[in-house]
Length: 544
Image (cartoon, rainbow, N blue to C red):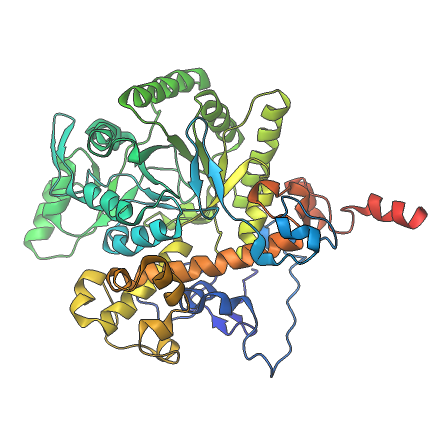
């Protein structure tokens, strides 16, 4: 069985666990002391774009052409002349990669502008999302990228007041939205997911009444991690019973005789809380279409200006239905999540074996969008998710769906800086340890080698300080500083790839900016082989 390499000697990075194609470990721990590429980039930012120990080394890359039909075998083109969407400097011939503009936007009538073409994965009812929310939300807002509040946040909140499908108060939802808005400056957005339970609980009505058009809504059809509803593990039998009373499905039943007897004996128990499956009462596309359009119409009447749809790694019928209905309903974004991803709790067997892998799903999404466009139907703007953590794969994802793809979704990659920064804050600011959810008692060598102050540890510290000011920087969670540092590195790397392709705006990226490193990939993704791309132009030059 093929395994991705655990180490990158050129960058000085190593994975603690088994790495996935993304470069992240298959199991990413919040207390990790390092140091995969994303972990190290959250500290050292742009430094990690280049091989270590400059001046005393030479380096060369591993060849990934034979890895089959996956994003690692996609090759990025480079051109030696020309400019598309170029800056005003181009006439002088002194353009730098930093002149590439990474701003993007998505939406139909009401465009949402983003500083970078990144959006977080959905961070919902998992405990880890709640614990590190200050870092995730603050960091996303400061970076000018959208963040998604995942499903079931209100339903699992003990303090939420719900009666007859009407929410009177939802403290956790309030906290999440208000944290993002604290640093929001007009770029990015905050999206609230809506699943079956959320719809029954009146989440959409509550959010629009309290926050108005500051929040967008995201309908939830699925995700890449599993093909059943959202799940969490509960160990407290009383809390499990509370969730059952809220209308959730608990396995096993915490009110059943067996669970009650086990609790009396002191036995530790694990209860899985499940969300209901949508559309189980419908049997055809036409029925789904009617229900979906009615739901969107209801949300429009509530006052939502921006509505999006998140779909998972379903087969071709499900993908086509999502694309057609998103377009018909004038949605602002369709997020398409490939198999194998996930930020929280999913059955491991499903993560391993269900659904369409990311590259194949994204390639078909492009094909279907092109079919709609050929018919004169403008496809809904798309975002792709499922294993994006590096500048190279971000470019590949944008190019795979170009010109229809406006963003890439990063789930675990955007959580790692939150964990890491919080652990550092817990050590350097002991009074903040509980609030920051720090896991360390001292800095590991992998961090302390850079210093013992945030200024010395995070290479992005001073650029963020320049943005927010001397006073405000002291109130920003270290996890947000780490996210700022990582995002700056990802952005710089993306600028470099785009400059090499002579694309100076996100909207200028084209699908032929990527090619297949092997023929299996060429067939699967509908790409030209690297040695055949522009071969006709090359021969025309030779035969001129």
